[in-house]
Image 1: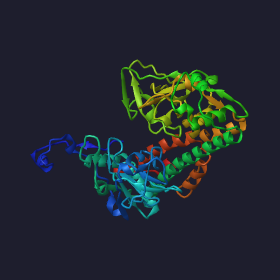
Image 2: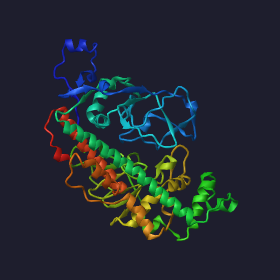
Image 3: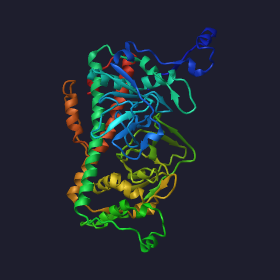
Length: 485
């Protein structure tokens, strides 16, 4: 949904009114909502973060420094690239359940907002590019969060923020935003409930991912003989004279030995089929929205999350209309950050699509528990370390096709493979007879049973519904509550 419009007539008075600017950006606007309230009047307290300086960063600590790149299109904090730091008397400590809004950012980051949930065992500081918004009224807070995640707010902040070469600074202009409100109080409650449902789904994804990691770690710990030794000349020769420290580190050798000595044995990815490489078409058009039926899904490492899910949709048009994704596949990231190399995504085939050379694919006809188990193994923390330490490269790490195919996979008992697979992929019938009164309770019960893959797909669906509702509120269109339950 796009809201930005351009003025129809530009005359001398409008040019003078814009400070003699001739920039097209100064003659764009977004429509005012039919009913609105200033954001600043809905907030109980505002805090702006503080920059502690790079000299305060350390490798590991119970103090975390939250930066703008930890705030994405998700509704919760992205802690996959979080920084740790030493104590600072000037730093700003946020309150649990407050909203974080990015006031300084580049393309895509400016105006992003999340719900902050404090994690046990950590104390957090927020950077100078973040505004903390405290809203005491819970229902109002979730309504505002739903609105601020919409394109209406994103386009507002984009239009009022001065340009910049890389980073743009909006200061506190976000507080002047006119928050649209519906005529019907039930619609406001609906937005609040859908927002809370999205948050619960994202939280469930995190919890199920933790459970998968725990099940894998405990099984290897309990049923393997783990010991550590140091590299000798024979090992170096066996590794084709590779002198990378990763292959001989205690961490890598410990994981490798745990898999090799696992009491139920192991198998290789090669046993399930050959890996195939991706490609980027020479003549293509790439978009962030599907404008017509000619566009196909475009999958690259940047759109895949640490949970083995999609972070966002991107689309591509290939002029020769040949696409490499036309079967169910596991897609493995093969280059990037060292900890990204094992991450993979289950592509459930519905329409031909395309992935680039930053991914390998393993094709299969039927989605089986074995395939899902393998997906969970490679997405686990222990395998990210195991694969990452085998990676080659200085600035950008890479894992070769042969390395990935020959990686050992512990052959867990079938019952345990099934239990792990179910946390990632589990379909549950949709709820029926929903009302505003029972919606959130029933949805949370269902969310607890869904797999990570299904939860993520439903988050996309709910975001689309939320965007449509906000659009109807802005343009004062009639909204049928039953259409969204």
